[in-house]
Image (cartoon, rainbow over the protein chains, first blue to last red):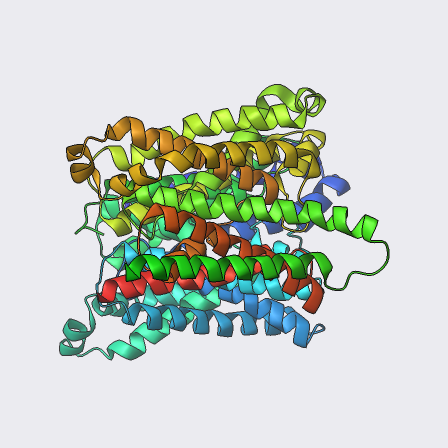
Amino acid sequence: MSRLAAAVALTAGLALASLFVGMSHVSLRGILAGQELDWLVLVESRLPRMLALLLSGASMAIAGLLTQIVIRNRFVEPANTGTMESAGLGLLVMTLVAPGAPVIAKMAAGAGFAMAGTALFLAILRRVPLRDPMLVPLVGILLSGVIYAGTAFVAYRFDLIQTVLAWTQGDLSGVLRGRYELLWLGAAMAALAWLAADRFTVAGLGRDIASSLGLAHGRVVALGLAIVALVTAVVVVTVGMIPFLGLIVPNIVSLALGDNMRRAVPWVAVSGAALVLACDILGRVIRAPYEVPLGTVLGVLGSGVFLVLILRSRDRAA
Amino acid sequence: MPHERRARLALLVLGLLALGAILAFMTLGARGNWGFVLPFRGRKLLGLLLVGHAVACSTVLFQTVTANRILTPAIMGFDSLFVLCSTVLVALFGSAAVAGLDPRLVFGLNVLLMVGASMALYLWLFGGEERSLHRLLLIGVVFGIFLRMLAEFVQRLLDPNEFMVLSDMLFASFGTIPPTLLGIAVAAVAGVTLWLVPRLSRLDVIALGRPVAVNLGIRWRAEVLSVLAAVSVLVAVSAALVGPVLFFGLIAASLAHLAVGQSAHRYLLPAASLVGIIMLVGGQTVLERVFAFNIALGILVEFAGGITFIALLIGKGRR
């Protein structure tokens, strides 16, 4: 438990640092002296950004863990099960059908599409008789690519490529007060996953074992996927797609802790938040005054770590 | 032999289709001065022909060398490698130096870098321990993503002016083929194609796999690496002209196998090249003339290609 406390302290340190990194200068002295400009930047921009990072990092990492347990494969996450790309497609469709709809309605449409995309992925998997663990993420990456190409095609047709790019690329430079609060809903969903963690762990044993232990396997799996879809849609609509986070964080945690979900969830949440905070700070510092978007920094790191994970794993272990 | 007759017939039909696509591309909807229309469309056509031929041939060659009909250079990350090579070139020398140089020279440097890097990639992927196909594919796909992300990251670190230079070089698409590179692209593709012609039967032997080929007197490593150098040049040409296309080669090669019904390279390579040309020229004609689109061909190819690939993977699992 004390190790977890240390991790929390580290994350809190990163969060504090995140408040004081950026182009317009915010100093601790200015804050304490009640400087108006410093307070304005802090309250309107820095604090919302820090909270958005914490919330989206933690909930995306938990969504990844949940996906892996429910689909029973270590190498899946919302970004390679068709979930995240479908959420983007849902947002686009909503923009076309009802341009004036409030964000929460867009988010709901995104979540609905995300569910449908995941269901499509599972339906394709059922048609693959040979259950090679490497095949699952491979099919998922391809399917995500196809869904994204479809989205891009529609967007291109209606001149909405710019809009779609805003969702595609995880970027927090646009987060201000009033534009991120939906993330609390995502975090609440992630907390729900924690409460039901034991059920998901049992469901992760497979349909037969879970049923004979008295679990309504189908319903628990559906609940898990619904949580994942909601969290994903919330994150995509507020900060954009954050790839690889849900993949690498649970894998690294499980290398250290093993596979008990209830024990892993706090670690996954804290590490996910710490990782996005660190990547975002790096993106802000490395090429100041310009920003490297979070999605790019995390993309390099995440795909590199994913590659190492694949190379390390034995065929049976995945 | 009935096989040979079928293959020849298939080539004939494909050839006629390609000719039809080319004629349609050059003439449909043309109004006004032919003296302007023909050269204008001709340059575009030349680009499409080069890309169709280069991608299809590089895919078939790569599949021969790896003894596999699902792997393609684009899927194993070679296209992304080209993007990274160009990015690194600009990052190292700065845009002023690169922009001052002849674009053909830059392209040449890029190809050299690319040949070296892709050989290293090949030896890393296929040289060591035996890997299962799915694992190999996953490694290739993720490595491709890694290279793309790395290139994007380096691009973000560049000065915005340098980035402009790079994006002119990199973000070519089917609608905007850079005319300055056409000359050197023709030379490169023609050179590789002429180099291939006397080697067609040797490629048939390589396709039998390493043990048999070595037994029949092939100097495996040298032969495979030289074929791979040819693949790298072709990939570089297509990536420089229209940017990376992930699944196009896969469709062209699969359709060529279907059409020809046998694996002799003297039929397979021309068939693949014709299929590639039909798809690109025909597709671009349909999009431009029927739907009045201009640059969406790449997106459509990705869409159809991804579905084809998933179907191939599932079909393979069945068997």
